[in-house]
Length: 473
Ligand code: GUN
Ligand code: ZN
Figure (cartoon, rainbow, N blue to C red):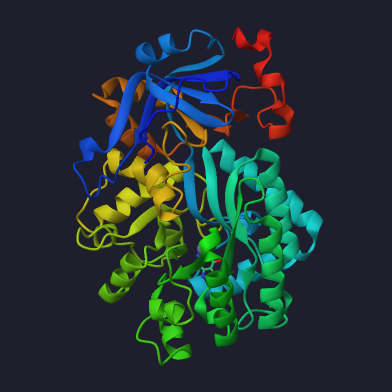
């Protein structure tokens, strides 16, 4: 956490303010006194300069420090939060969201692979990437850890669209060279790694884009492909490259892994054996995890994506949040929508489902913990906690504006709440689709529910945002 405030307006360039209720986290409320873990300002302001946060605090403290700041967007009925972080989602499954779910493995064969086969066509990939980003930004998600397909075209389409918005995103080519239809199967392990490395060199750290090595899951890669994937990851881990995969999602999947890798004592060890378990490894699901696997995930500082909507839809199993957050070996946990196993693009809606999954285990997740998972928790799972996921000086200015009255009824319901967290809990439980009303990416308002042109690319803001006439708003 960068606690030292930057100097006020260090280079004299234009300032922007966002005013409203402001909520941000500085520590994990699962592990600390939860009231020490966040800052909340009932009337707060975030000051932005050059795409970064310059200052945050109570409006009455902050405003006098910036007499030249007149360009202020005010949201009196909304909570200004860090943009939400989706730690696991398949953009390429947007066209098949809501397909009839049987078991995970049948659903993959029936719907997922045929859909993913279409992404060899760059035009189709472009179309889906465009729709996907709109869904994410509408819901207030500004960073995501994203599966593409085995086709390089789908990776290019994704990063090209991300670059247009200037979003901080993680993706890469999916690796799969067995147990999938020929239409989506890699030609050979060697070729799949050559293509991955070429994409990595093209996209990693280009602007805000970050690359991940993505073996889909152990059953769809040969040992040779996992070995080469591990070597690629280890060659680039110091440069911030990720490894992203599925782990321990459903019992029949785990049974299959046991058959395929009989020499390994558990599923996590399969990945570890090939050098794939390390500090930038992000594991989706982790519903059925043995104690020794939690130990490994903790020791290796892996991130875990909790995807409750998807786990419920596919009948996978229940994520054990309170095992993951065991005090003596806590694991970094963020939220994932896992579209298209997940049935919506909204991180707050997934929080509502995370609460219910936890309740089935006789534990609760209150709104303090929930919105931590949606923001700073996600950033910690992705090892980006010094970059995004908090509103503090020096952080990238990615912001969600979360309405406290998204509908007439919800606004009325708020009258019967005592504090901000009661309001947020009711809203994540209601799970309305229009709760996020504006989204800022690197300081640009790329989504505005009320604007004629709801979505705007970064290039459309060049110079115009800070013209004197616009400062008068
Ligand atoms: N395991 C391997 N592939 C997938 C996928 O596409 N979705 C989910 N939920 N689990 C998987
Ligand atoms: Zn998934």
